[in-house]
Structure formats: C-alpha cells, structure tokens
Length: 116
Image 1 (cartoon, one colour):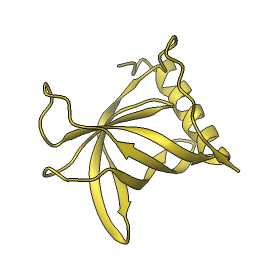
Image 2 (cartoon, one colour; image 1 turned 180 degrees about the vertical axis):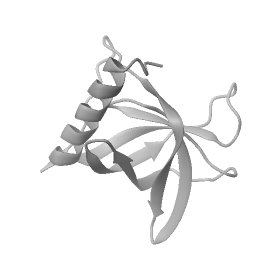
Image 3 (cartoon, one colour; image 1 turned 90 degrees about the horizontal axis):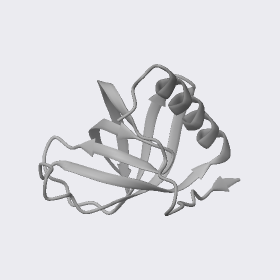
Image 4 (cartoon, one colour; image 1 turned 180 degrees about the horizontal axis):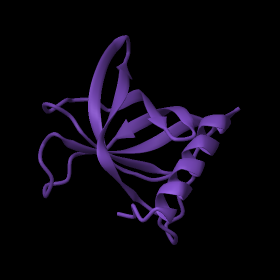
C-alpha cells in the first residue's frame, strides 16, 4: 500500500547530510536523469543536478543501507541562495516497505552524527 507522507508544521522532520556523492536516479516519464543527493529526511531532500533541469514530478530511486527506496517526488523551486542546479524535493507517494527502509536508514545516519 502506498504511503503519503503528511507533514506537520509544528515539528520539522530531522534532516541528514549525505556524506558521499550519493547518486540517485530519476525517471522522467521514460527518460532517465541522475542527480547527487545532498540532504534527506522522511519528507524530502535536496539534490544537485549536473545542469539546470526543468522538472516538477519524477520517480526517484536511491540506494540506502537498508535497501533500495523508490518514491514519487515533487521538485520545488530552487532557493535563491543555492545554485540553479540545486533543487529541494518532497515525497508525494512512497510504498510502505520503502518508507520503512528510508526511516531505518535515516535513524542510523542520525545516530552516526550526520544531522544537517
């Protein structure tokens, strides 16, 4: 069953910084693109594209210590302070098993001191 993350405006989901140049794959309606994952939380994250990319929705696939995670994400406008190739995203839909793998990975990373 799909999981639709619900954000609370009172409690911010803990963010972790990604220590390596972790590559994620994006499915853009039959085309593949790649980005480097910089930040991650249960509600979304931040990626760097090799070049500016005009994309709003995509399926992403990333490899975590708990296994692969696939989800549907929405890309937000690039913040002015970041480069035009950096794009924040939020999870729109994620399978329950993928959500559990993401949660386990983030919990482990926070324990190891990778908080953002």
